[in-house]
Image (cartoon, rainbow over all chains, first blue to last red; front, side):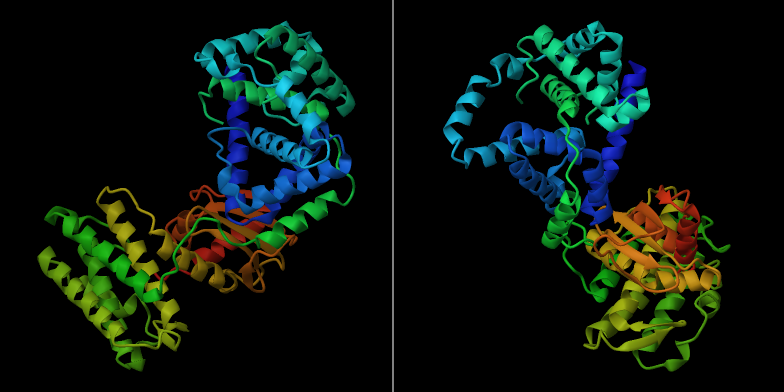
Length: 193
Length: 309
């Protein structure tokens, strides 16, 4: 538990410093954020839009928004990765909605809407414990990957380096973990935020 | 992220940690395209914290008013507390009385103070406060400060170059340097009397950081002749901050897009000003240095050489 908290604390310090540099007009901070999270943002956008070209436009929008309005990111509320992920998701949804496929995609999103249980969970500690127990049930190789990505805030290349395995292996382990956690956590769905 | 995230926050974090599995390596060129588009919309170098620009006279007046309020709080015992340069608080205020009198003389056309040494020229006034009632010292400084303000009110040539105690600057910039000095000694008094130091208000701090960064290459040159011929990126965070590229043997300018630099220093804007006032250093400032630490050491050594004391 202590190690997890230290990992999250360090990741939080890194994000806070990046946010301060962005606000101060240090463009090398934006380059660092892109190098760290660009592949993740592209993946998020690609998953929603289904188009690499559209996803690249979303990536540009997301990083331009971060640079032009860095104050919108609050390190006390979320990690930088999560902020970018939420932003990428919204922008990607907007992009899809503006396309000819608007109606079909809306149906999909509606069907996969966030259950009420998500919003109404009052006891954060209980949910945290539920998540922790679920992660502990994972096979060792999957559990190590998700612990580093989740508790320590690492990107998939960083997880690969830490575990000394290929990036593709990290991805496949995370996908397997994702599927299991989706089954186990039930209403605490991990699919759509 | 918060130390006590909500349940929704926690699950959202987990969701996106798992989504690392979907990451896709960007195609060549996307990085450049994104960075170019971003910096086309917002030029690097400038903070997003909104700050009203203040004139040098306003910065000087505000900092003097703050010092006056502080001096009004002190009890008699606190005026005897030791502070900088073997002076007690009375002596330090005496130094400021001497500075104010010389500055008023300069404003009235007395050229003899242009090259006077800042400490030597005021030392007699500083030492003369020994044994005087604190109220007398405070009243003398208050009158001297008010006299300077009245002379400034009568002038409309803030852009004119002037020379004072060895510093040649436009009057507006020199008044920022004076505000810098008043803030430095305000904090000296606060430290001597056990009070917490206090950052300048953002408008004044913005002018102070602008002045200090612009003079950094001069400071580096004063610190030694063997500084490396490289550029350092200086990122000053918080209100009054911004980003500068400082060529140790050249000029300092607001950061430009995608400039290569040998070292990056990230530090709070007010903390950097304490370095430029020679009241702090690289370690105590809390600066975060990336790459070549020696370059950062040169940068901060140069900053400290800007102090008049």
